[in-house]
Amino acid sequence: MGDLVTPAEAEALWLSLRVSSVAILSALPIAFLTALLLSRRRFWGAGLVETVVHLPLVLPPVAVGYLLLVLFGGRGPVGEWLFTNFHIRFVFSWTGAALASALITFPLQVRAIRLALEAADPGLAAAARTLGAGAFDRLANITLPLALPGIVSGAITAFAASLGEFGAIITFVSNIPGETQTLPLAIYAALQSPGGEAAAARLCGLSILLAIIFVSLGDLAAKRIWR
Figure (cartoon, helix red, strand yellow):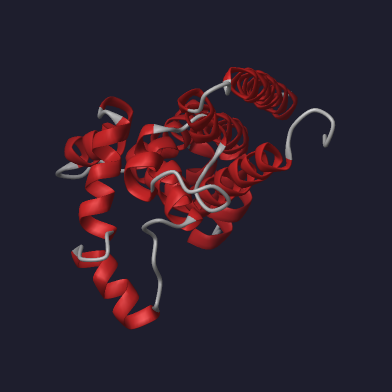
């Protein structure tokens, strides 16, 4: 790795993997519960909930980053409350990059898990209930296994998408080497520097390679689980 990329580029790669891992794992439980709610329940306002969930897919990422800055910035209502009470700060930190990535890729996870749940036989949970299985037993032994292909496929696809996130991250946490500079931001920084074309080409090739690997892993995992 040291012969292929510089230490600064390796640091951007490591940061991208860390940001994407935290983003996907932290959003996964909420994505599962949201998909379960939308697939199994009919309630007033379901259409509004679905619209809000999918909003990051259609909004410009820069707009999502700006909204995060307004809410979680130093003087934002949520950001000021978190820092005053818990000394938690998202803005200008890698945790903020993970928050932005989690929000942008959240709909991908919800969509994949929901499709898996809707494709499953609803009679299985109903039959288990008639046999006396409680809500937790049905969730652990029926619903979760049924949703597993969607969970794996959605998580890996969202991870690959998170690796390429740019607009929301640079708007919310800026482009700070070693702290918030992920691979896409490192490419942008290289292109802004005189003679940085070679570095940008290396990082671009690395991004393409990672995207191909994780998208292929997502398809492979889903196919093996469905068997």
